[in-house]
Amino acid sequence: MPYHSIKDILNICKSTGCEFWQVVSDEQTQEALSTPNAVFEEMRQMYHIMKATVNEYDKSAVSAGKMAGGGGELLHKYNKSGNKLLGDFLSLVIEYAVKTAESNACMKRIVAAPTAGSCGIIPAVFIAYEQYYKVNEDSIIKALFTASGIGEIVAENASISGAQGGCQAEIGTAAAMAAGGVAYLEGGNGECIANAAALALKNMLGLVCDPVAGLVEVPCIKRNAIGAVNAITAAQMALAGIKSVIPADEVIDAMFQIGCSLPACLRETSQAGLAATPTALKIEKKLRSKGTLL
Image 1 (cartoon, one colour):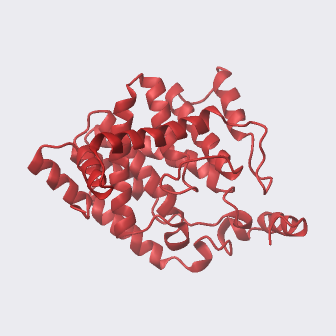
Image 2 (cartoon, helix red, strand yellow):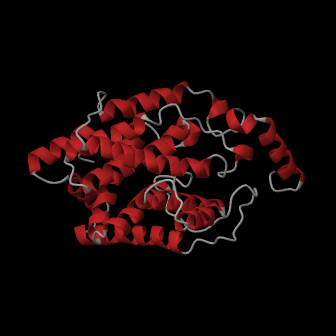
Image 3 (cartoon, rainbow, N blue to C red):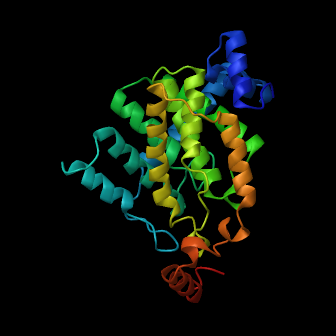
């Protein structure tokens, strides 16, 4: 791989004149022993699956733990009521994030981006962006390459696993990826993309992984919505010219160190945090008595 850090990608951009997404696309083309067009179309297929997940959302589906289902429909109705608190774009983002994350909990088809637990952030941000801003799909695909490059760096230098790095590694990484993609869509250069990613990830540092009853339902689904809004917030700050005092690569390193410092009870084992609250323990006991959990 020709790059191992965000700084490496930015240096390649400067030396070749290529955009951030092109550097990532070229690397993925070489790795796959494929052609640029084939890799581009493969990414488009992933995006179409993301769209299908949102479009085919089943409002009647209920998760195995009975803690998820129908939230996306509630948001849809609220957004259509005319009384919503947020603007149209952010309202769509939140709705799509919950719909996608609930679909995962209900065993529907999703794209792990970068993980199943954080699958709602990138689809929500990019699908809502395409719909609201009426951009062509090719632009979104380029944004997805931008996002995937950020995800590659995090995966190599830190972790995208909640079991290893806590929820910051999943929701935080997805938010950073989406933030960088939005910065690209809005005309940001490589430095802006890096700052957007850094700001988004910084906002998620220390977030623990504490799923109730060990299921990817509570608090995971709602965190997808928060992560998606965080991504857009970070992108807007970067586009306004706000820079992350700590460079993106150092933020990624910090996330790794924080993840290593987290006790095992806060890394997907459901032994602490929200998973250890009285209500959560009652839910777990009930699910075990019914045979839902082993």
